[in-house]
Length: 389
Ligand code: NAD
Image (cartoon, rainbow, N blue to C red; front, side, top):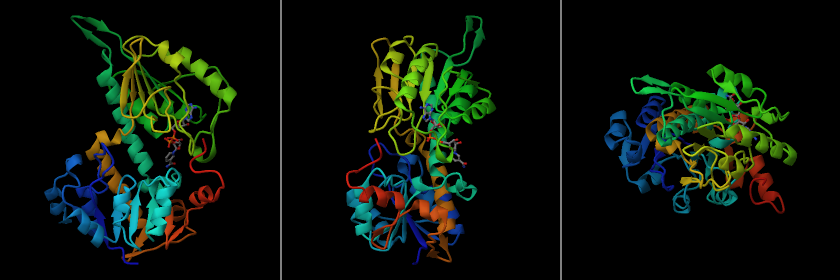
């Protein structure tokens, strides 16, 4: 299968400002012997002009022409139905397609005989996959921005200031969930001068938090929940109740709380209950990075929505923070795309080796079939239509 022409168009998801290919990514693909085509205006929202792309050597076309001429279309979000209808048999689609959350999309891409590659299935702990890890690159941006959003909303200083007008105490920041996003939120809040504490249910996270110089929150409860592949496992109901109760008492002492906790294949765990919010001081700020249509870490938080509780706590359901740092997020994303293409395309042809763990993780549909084992299992399960609730 020829796979020399790589194309990108503007994202259409509401509020999305990232683009799958940056001018830097285009130049790297051209250096690797690909041709690059880009829809006019595709990078506008990320502050990449059309001439940035043409200067890099890409060809500028209309959106429809990109779909017609590209062997490989790269995207950030899953394509809308109108875009799926523009894909042709044999064309390759690479992006964050979330097939486990949208089985209909997987079905329609198989029906369209598209070779769909979803980067959220990447086996992230393989060292060969690290340069392709879009979940980490975007989580890193999200953690950074979460600290900035919190600082911007908080009515006080983050650092301690000693001025002629007096001395201010530094803000106390708690970051719950010390994975990629959480560790970056911790580091960024520390750079801003806050006194930062991290918390996680995985035992290994203690050392990760300590390596940033932050404190670790010891809840005094015996909850330790390391799951498969370095991720957390879901807590039992008893563990969850114990954790929520202990967290509620601790949370009341913080000015800013940033939550980033996720459990693979499950809705995000609720860690900050309504009771915990009610115990916080007026003016406190809570940023929930896990807020999505499937719930979040903060009770009642909604994506892209900011609310103020009756006791004056601002709750920010963050949703898509990487989109709010679109230039850096797109540049990192495009580097990940360049790396996966270097892995999958040899001598201008897409090489699909089913024994390769990277292939097995990311390849969703090929030749009219759904080939990804987890997506197939979900489709073939008699009653299930989505992730485990
Ligand atoms: P994630 O997005 O799945 O979850 C974020 C964090 O939430 C995790 O640290 C998790 O332990 C925590 N969490 C889940 N339930 C919780 C609860 N009830 N209470 C408190 N915290 C809870 O995680 P991630 O950022 O994708 O990273 C998960 C792990 O994988 C980390 O150890 C990370 O360092 C590792 N990782 C390794 C590589 C690699 O080896 N290249 C790449 C990516 C991630």
